[in-house]
Image 1 (tube, rainbow, N blue to C red):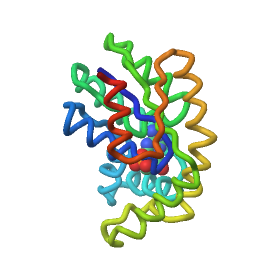
Image 2 (image 1 turned 60 degrees about the vertical axis):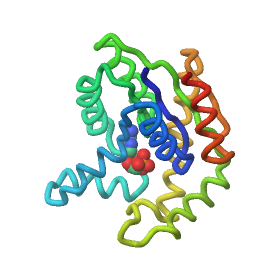
Image 3 (image 1 turned 135 degrees about the vertical axis):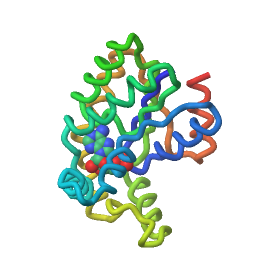
Image 4 (image 1 turned 120 degrees about the horizontal axis):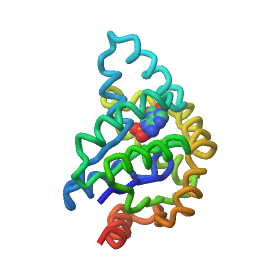
Length: 190
Ligand code: AMP
């Protein structure tokens, strides 16, 4: 099974991915994590460039992200996969379909976690306040958050329509408890 978890920043994609990994044997492919891994090599000029883009809240160029994910897809072809934070625009969605088709697989479901934008802001602000400075993600700050939500609305939301047309979109209410959201996801995949 191949799933996409789609939703705005702070909607709980990471938390719900962990649940799918721990309880249902999925492998999580999170482009944000893959990019942070690249950035941890601060000596590389590419790492520096990516880090600046991530801290601004903009999207990292498609060619970089797509290369990272395509490598993983062929490696993990036969596994249960969750795509978390990818695709984030229409071009990435199309490339994902093409890459999966090439290895004779396709997406089974796209789970769209819908969350009110006001609640999102409160959640991310809480995440910022609850984490020690040294453990905090460098893009967890109010300015970047506002930009990330704008980028989500203009680049990522159009994908919802694309998957709706394909008939694989499942929308869930992301405003209830973590447990309830997990249950909604479980109902979809079982
Ligand atoms: P995330 O960990 O998913 O919240 O992503 C953190 C940041 O990484 C985003 O704000 C983007 O700058 C970058 N990023 C993650 N995934 C993608 C993607 N699929 N396309 C472009 N940029 C991405």
